[in-house]
Length: 448
Image (tube, rainbow, N blue to C red):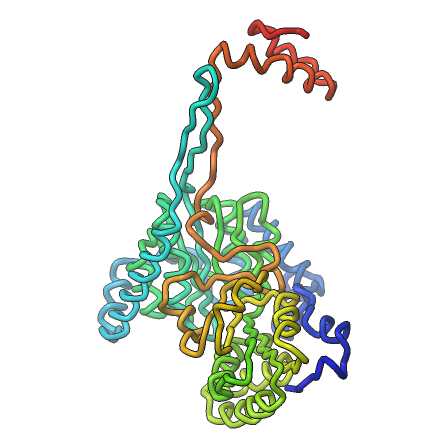
């Protein structure tokens, strides 16, 4: 990690440091490249490989789904039950620590309570001559949730995706989880049960996304797919968008801390490492007008890195994607923070609520020394599925509305239509759509 002074580097250089490309082509592992050559006869890059998987699953269904699972995960599921059974739920309950299960339940209660506040209602309004206009909110019929299962288990992600869907009234929630050594983490299973997931399938990767998008004999088709994953999962969500909806294209996790001289460097370092341990690609940034804080935080980072269970991952993240920017003023710090549009923004300042109105682009904002980012990850209630890679400039946090659609309602009386007819006819004919105009005239619309 390095410290950059904006006054020395220049504003353009700092902006360039903060704006990273959202999608980079990843280098495939030797194992996957060898599988490409052996089984597909081609040396494909990540985008090409995902496109091949998606189209094969679309055409062949289960045959391609099972083939790619065996190819990449080494699991032969052909003929096996990929649906989690009641016996597996019971085994999870027996293996789980009751205290952790109780914490999951309390977290779920907080998440449900928060998202209940987001629910909107359908509405109707009466207009002139008895006409009625309105909007009807309809929950999606079936939603598919993807939960990673590779290097770590994420029961918190289960709650954050499934609980808002349940609050929205989605009829069926299905979930895809790649098993580890043939099994799914017990807390992932129990979180799904707490959150109201209908069915869980033991399958992952781009092929799981394609299966939910198009449906197969084993997997029902979903109207929308949500949930985080690796680059292959993200590219697959991008490829199937349009055949179904998706929540967002999620990149590596990121945190940006805006801090003043009152901030505790130990808190800042701890919070930066909380993101760095996610992934070698994760980004941890601090922006502050205090050079002293910058130096102390840098030293604290090195001290706190030692001995972390995921030290290798966190160190690679901090070394490659960590950054501390020293600005001339707090206003400049906020400006740079908005340019970055981070997934998580912490305001470690003496008066955080005075700065909040200046924050325009962030997935979630954490105010004050006792609102660290992991509070939002696990327990507070707001969703932790957030826009990354600068997409907070136009994406929103996952919420109840994510799982609903809006239908317009229009009901005009004869008198109301007659009054509007001249305007409609003029506009239709101006666009050269005579049949549109005729549909109004047939009902006695004024031709003038």
